[in-house]
Length: 73
Ligand SMILES: [Zn+2]
Image (cartoon, rainbow, N blue to C red; front, side, top):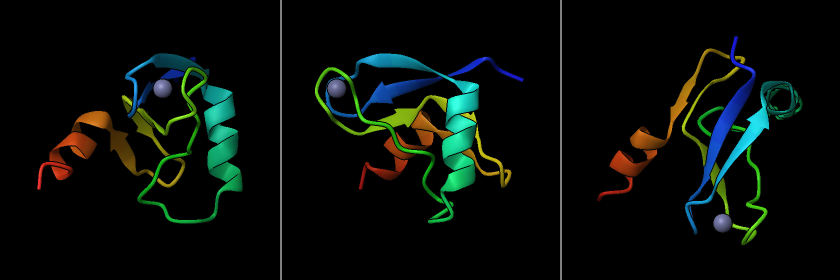
C-alpha cells in the first residue's frame, strides 16, 4: 500500500504528496460521485488537484493521464 498519493494541480501544475490515510479518509466520507477522486485544493493557487494515480475504496482507478485524454475533445 502506498504511503502517499501524488496530486497535481490542474491550474498551475504544482505537485503535492498527500498522505494515503488522508486521501482514503476523504474517500470514505465522500459518498458522492464515484467517477471523481477525493478532491483537494492547491496550496499555491487554490486550484483543483487531481491524483497522478489513485485507486479508490470502490476499486475505481483515477489517473491524471486518463483525465487529460478525456479533456481533449
Ligand atoms: Zn495550483
